[in-house]
Length: 420
Image (cartoon, rainbow, N blue to C red; front, side, top):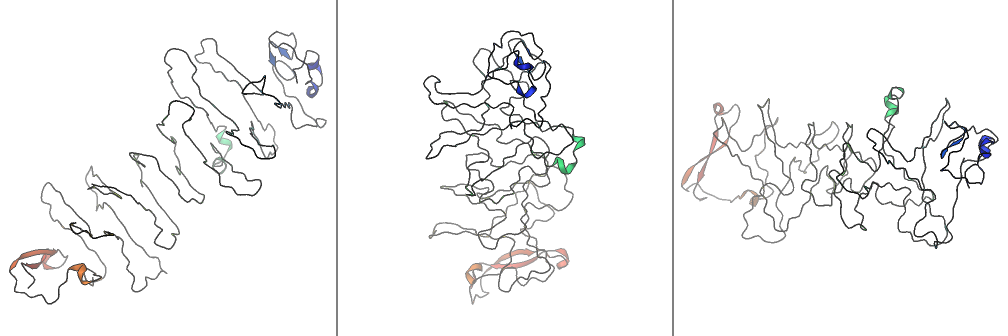
């Protein structure tokens, strides 16, 4: 395949492509070719009209087949385009190629693509292929001297969904995607693929790169990250990190988890955290730590952590089962004879001065409490049968401040030196 000669460009529009070559470096006095420029119909460029007599699906069809690498070397390119800026280019732009697909009519169209790239394996038999890429985009500052200043951004790929927004309503605008990865399975094998997006260092290079942000979404979103497909693990963070998730902006919910139908069983939770410490020393909280800072005057009650179990109108809480908003404890697989274990919890009030009132718990029920403690066995509360009252009385402990009882003052329990 060559380029059309002077005589050939004067043929019928779609018959101009013949096998002949001429030097494109010279100026040719013709209305179709000028100083190496190739354009359809005239120098300015005009559309070739493909009528019913045109019987092909392509305008240019170029095919090559490598039968020997002896003269070619290690790499072959069917096309090689290169454009350079050889003069000062401030305020200018340089593009090696542009591809446009324009639906320039009032008719409907099913598929509109500016370019299509495919790397396919067609040969029969066993094939071993090291790397397959339908397209590669490389951002490569070449050699030279002096520092390079980037005033805006450098992108390997810049995607700009654009157009006249007034022509597209909100429903249709929501169908415009920056990147759309469409998984296809032609033979019905339903094979699991690798990564939807993979960013890694090139092992063939001597150095390694790191990223400031793995994913940076700098515009407003209804949902920042949405996982709509069935996942074994929604998000996996396996690399070393100082903070796996950081929420620093103003938000109504730092992390919101809403599950419409939680599966039945002990292995299912809205949020589950499991950590392992080989020789831990942690006085904040190994599995989880919550810290709230108040910077102004409170406008109402404030709770650091809340947990509720709610019921709708039809569920029934069956007899003999415990319903509890918090559950926790200490489990050891072996004896811990020297350990001091507090399994219910540690609550601290480190204050700079005495408040109006100070309490370890506050209880609020709409029904009368059966007992403050429900013990599964006598040892759970240290109960000893047959204790007397002859022990030395040491004093009392304020047990409860009950609204409507004792004029708002606490009620007390006496304590003794022995249980006899």
